[in-house]
Image (cartoon, rainbow over all chains, first blue to last red; front, side):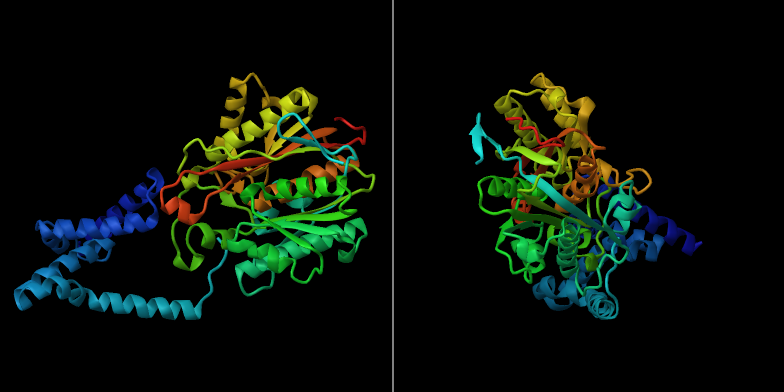
Length: 117
Length: 342
């Protein structure tokens, strides 16, 4: 049941992104940034945490989940280090994801060449 | 010697000839309705090169080589090369002509480049600046994506309404020989900007430019659309073509029956899923080179044709800064018979 929920919720989040690509003039980069900001906002007002518990990876893997992680990290950072945590908390919490994406991005760039569409 | 008639039109009374043309394309162009008419279809869109930019230069070289072969000419017989493409600093053309040893005139007119090149070449021939000119233009889907959107490595999604940049090059040898088709007149367009700022709606940005140039040419020459069997626009696509016809209709000019658009001819829009049609310098260049000119030469095509290639003169920087898109359209008037029109 957990898998089904994750699949459906994650799919819906991605489908929303597709609607933005098809129906608006927003560039993909702006849509992605919008997702992150939405995640931060929903996390800040306390909605994303219970949502992530319900949907699992369906809520944490899409980019809104990255925004949630940033917001959550800032909260934890502030609790731990005070005001300095505003700056360090977000990246501390998301460091594994960022480092992994840089590493895998580089590995893929070295291994493969893009093809014509 | 070319002389001005009316506001912007240049008549070329010696009727320079399009001696030979060649079109080179890749897989998608080969699968399209004109696939069989291309001189060369290379399934590998890298054309054996390491980068997309080199591939585009290679396409230009190949198109020139084939055109020269058809005309039974050598590169050293050429007096000038007029070449252009979509890349920064026109590198596809510069590198494509690097080994030619011929005086090089680099052009930027976005998708209008081929008409611009042929028009300039015709004026040069008419003015006695030489006997043989090479006009060439190209675009490559993959290098254009890097130039205008994102490199393919980024894996970004394209909006489904965006026009598809043709991976193609076209080359034409314009000469003083007596062989159809003949250039009767050219009309360089003035820049038109009606305030469109959406990069995915370039057809709408270019249509006013096409309308302006066509209207100016008809007024200058005192002719009507009925005097031409074909009015072929560059790459307005569906939206832009409809808009052009409407704009001209407002001025009482009806081109509907004889109007075709290269952007709508190159691909099968339904089967190949390119809803808005093709774009890029290579679109008008290849369609004119493989479809229109050879048919006119054989006497199978239209007896008279206006080719109006349109260009959206934007850059990624101007779009990011929120600027609107200036459009330009250049017109070349061809006839299958040598009889002087103007």
